[in-house]
Structures are given as C-alpha cells and as structure tokens.
Image 1 (spheres, rainbow, N blue to C red):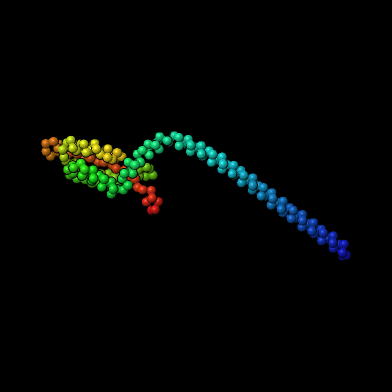
Image 2: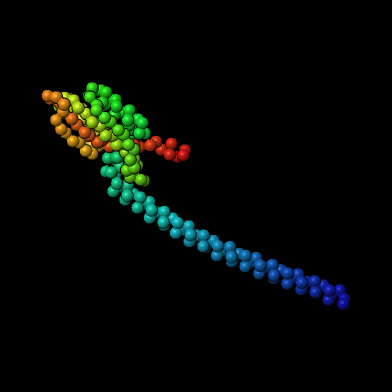
Length: 185
C-alpha cells in the first residue's frame, strides 16, 4: 500500500467516524426534543390542573365563608377550655362564684368527634340542693359565662326544705387541645 491508499483509508475512516458521531448526536437530540415535548405537556397539564384547583378553592371558600365566619366567632369560646383539668377548674369556679350547695360532682372526658372541630368533651355531672331562684339563675348564668357548653340533661325535684330545689344537671364542655401540643406529640 502506498501513501495514497493509506491517506484514502484514513480519510474514509474519518468520514465514517464523523457520520457515526453525527448520527449519535442526532439521535440524542431527537431524544432530548421528545423529552422536552413530554415535559412541556406535563407542565401544561399541571398548570391546567392548578388553575382548576384554584377555581375549586375559590368556589369552596365562597360557599364556606358563612361557616368559617361562624366558627371564628365561636373559636374563643371553644378554646376557653384547653384541657379537662382546666374545664373542671372552670366549673368549680362557677359553682364557687354562685355560692351553691353542691351535693355531688363528677367529671369524665368523652370522645366526641374524631377529626372534627371538637374532638373531646368534658362531661360534668353535678347535683345541687339550694334555693330555687339562686340555683336556676346559676344555670342561666352558665350560658353567659360558658356559651360553648351544653346542658345535655337537667332533672329538677323538690329540695330538702322550703324553697329549695334539687337539680341534677349534666353539662358537656368542649375540649380543644392546643395544636402545638398535638404537633409535638
């Protein structure tokens, strides 16, 4: 083989390598463009889904505005009792302020609505025997002092003497735990 043949062979190899490199880069470019189109369509789908969800959120916010406003008005009253011990202390304070004769009292924490706004309630079972007017006024003032509480049962009967009344009452007090304590647990 002479120099011309060798030069032609080397030149042919260079042309073949350039053709192979060009095809490889062309295939990589085609794959990259396909990936770009896939990513662009995924982006467009995500933008459309986001705008759809934003519209649904706006509709939901408008439809629940009244309920959320109502809850925000009641939230301070619902948060009045953060734990069962505080609820017991609050009831005992109200009894002491009312200066009512208490025959018995018991407290029990009851699961109310898991996952709801009010997960648990403190159920206070109280038995009073005191003056008719004073006892009923105490019960009425409980609504003003603890508006989130609920009287679930109330039985009245004649008391021990004269103008006395015996009142057996069950009061449910919502217990809202602080969110910080839930997140730490």
